[in-house]
Image (cartoon, helix red, strand yellow):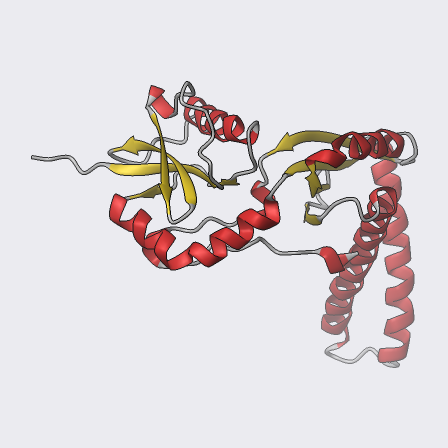
Length: 266
């Protein structure tokens, strides 16, 4: 019985193929540099999708990082597995989108920012202030909306409470994003953010930065960390631009396209 061999896909990049042949992949597998239709595919042989163990994830990132040292790749998420036929079909179908994305990412890296509260006490103070502000708005709106407390008044007030607190949370998020944008201005070529208001850190922001601007970016980050008041800002990177790419399974016929562009969100 023959075992079907597929390609485990690490990333795509522009030609010429980078010199990374000494890099080993998941489970010490050999790395293949496959060039098709002007696109270089960094891949390894795989009979099945590897387990998402810490060791395998580290090996995946090691291969992607080795490419990043030479050129900017389109990194694939862990577990991207395609047969040779599916890989050829994927590139034939999506070559314009892949080429456009490679051009957009050319010469760039991803930098990560994390925003957190300096300590629990200050976080509780901020929550208390938001709570007080919310109650004032709820009372004001309730007085305008409900002159008498009929059978449905309690339900309407609960619904109003959820709406008001959501509006306050959105205003606080907007203020945080405005603050970050004021520190970095137009230096990032693109930006995305992930918000987790109930956790600490409560926001993660990814910036797409030209490699030539990295020193300037790091200096702006250093200055920002000294003037963020009750917030704590930490940076990491440079990374492959995972936050700005979506690599889909070619067997489903989906195109490769950038992730949500939030340039207008500020």
